[in-house]
Length: 111
Length: 111
Image 1 (cartoon, rainbow over the protein chains, first blue to last red):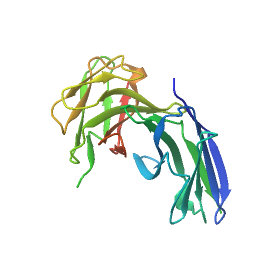
Image 2: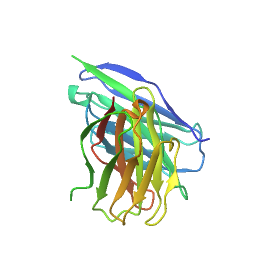
Image 3: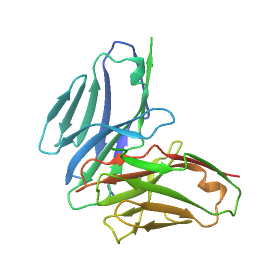
Image 4: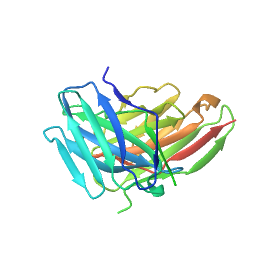
C-alpha cells in the first residue's frame, strides 16, 4: 500500500531553523499537507502544496517538494518554543477518499 | 463557524459497555472520517464516509460501527468496549478531498 514516512524526533535550539522531512511512495499524490498537533489538541492544518508546485512559503514556513525523489520538507524559520509539537505529513491522491498520514515528527525546541 | 465538533471530550467506560461518539461539521463537507491515535502508531483510519449515505471500512474497523446520519453528522459506536479501544479518537471532514479538518478529539479510557 501507499506509505508516508517521517523521522520520529527532531530537537532544535530556539531561534534556529527546523527542517522536518517526509517521504512518500504514491507518485499520483495530488495534495501534500503538513499538520501540527499540540499536546491534548487535534490536528491543525499548517500548510499544503499541490503536486504541480515545487515550493510554497507562508511567513516562517517553507514547504519544498521534490517529486522526483518523492520528498517533502517543512522548514520553520526562527523556531520558537511555541513550535514544539508533533508535525504530521499527509498526502492524498486525486480520486481517493483516504488521506495517508505519516506517524508524526515530535519537534522539541529548547532554549 | 465551529468547524468539526466532537462530543464528548473525555469518557471512561467499563469493559463491555457501549457508547457513541458524536461528530458534526458545519462546512458542508461531503466526506467524513473517524481516526484513532495511539502512541507510536500515528493516525489509523477506522471508518470513513465519502458522501452522505455511504460508509466504508478503514484500516482498523473491528469493534466499531458508524452511521452517517445526514451530511453534517457522522457517529462512531462501540457496541462492547474493550481495553484495546482505549485511545484518542478524532473525527475529520473534507470537501473534494482537499484540506482535511479535524475535531479536537475524544479521549476514551476503557477499564
